[in-house]
Length: 307
Image (tube, rainbow, N blue to C red):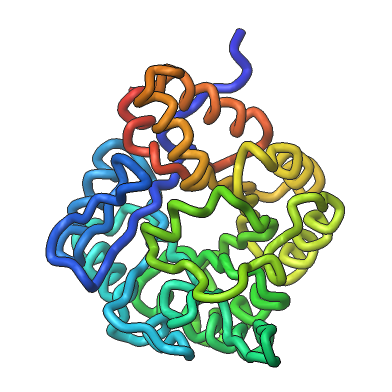
């Protein structure tokens, strides 16, 4: 009689690859999650695929940063090298690449900034130009899908146009269409080494109080050619997930983020909740609410539990 059933194909595994390390480095604020070296990332992708997972979501940590995020779109950038290595050894895994600049910017923001006295501005159009270059470089390296997570206006249309112009018509776009300014991103910034050096990201990420605006943001991305729509974070925005799934009828993803992960891990370590039961309940609720795919740091464990 059960209406909602989980399968390994529902999950996307986020992976962090770093140019700065030679061996796995555990993330203290995310027990069970690590950064991996370029030499290790292929094995991690292969292991995920062997467990039955179809897709990974790749984040890169460069050796050097600057104010133009040049490492994001460099042909020999960390993500570009990782994608080529993964695709040479494990062709069947779907490689989705994060397209954002925060990991590559010396100031940690998701775009080009300009100071105005004590205040700063993120320059939308200048940032979109860099995002386009990044997405094309990822596609050239072999990425199956690019995932712009920056929340700049107009970047989906610009990326789609550039991909098509460079004969990457089959490269998909997973848009972070409704990404909210959330307290639950904290541990991720440890993993990606991307905390803002000044200010915060509320000027370009969604206001947590706004649902109708979120739907307008999603509609813009649909019009511009997004293939998959992402809502982020997960549980605090499960109402948005449901409304996006129902209104637009397109493949819908949700990202169960680092802070949500860390909370369950902390509660489980203290014996307050059963980790496996809690995770299965959460993931079932997300799928029930309309998620066709779920990015989660538990993807490997879920594949094993379900099997």
